[in-house]
Picture 1 (cartoon, each protein chain N blue to C red):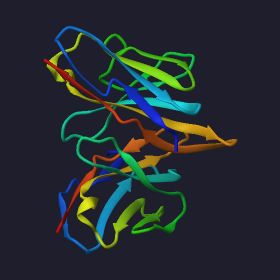
Picture 2: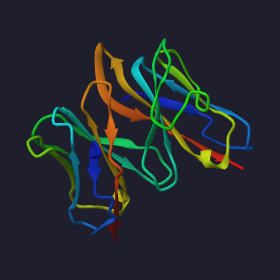
Picture 3: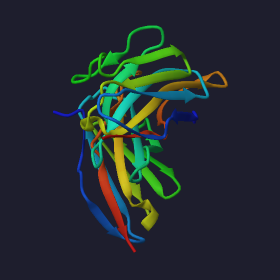
Picture 4: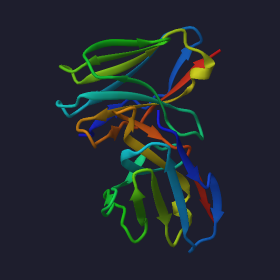
Length: 119
Length: 110
């Protein structure tokens, strides 16, 4: 499987500030996704990070609030802007379509997550 | 209609029993199906995937797929307390699309 790391693993932030979460993969991947998971809830897809183009956002999520970068096939960032307590959640990076040994796998794997608390 | 539906549970089984988790999906053209396990406070972990009708076994886990009924299930034999987690069903109807169910909470009682 692809090895995915996220930074930071957790943070406590003040209302009105912004936090950038990094996602690094050890293989080139076709698709990278950003999810949010609030306590006791299922996964909510925020956006798909497209390499070389704008991210594709799901309904209810906008670029001004959650700007995303995808500068290459192994890295992406998600920024949570102008934070409020409602943004407190676990943010998960995931990848799909990673290539190893000439074979591309289409299973989806998740990073360890970033636990964000906004006070 | 949701793309993927699961019974949210909670499902409780005694240790050593078979736990049966079920999932239905709406896109008849879906080709790939996945089961994830998520422990509280952790990220989802892929435990099984299945592409063909029938059963696929991996240790104590068996995934069952019935495309005609649009139904996929996960059986856990000899359930252990360490199997207590939320199990997420996911469907990949097209190459770059992935839909998750809301998950079924499983508790294995010692």
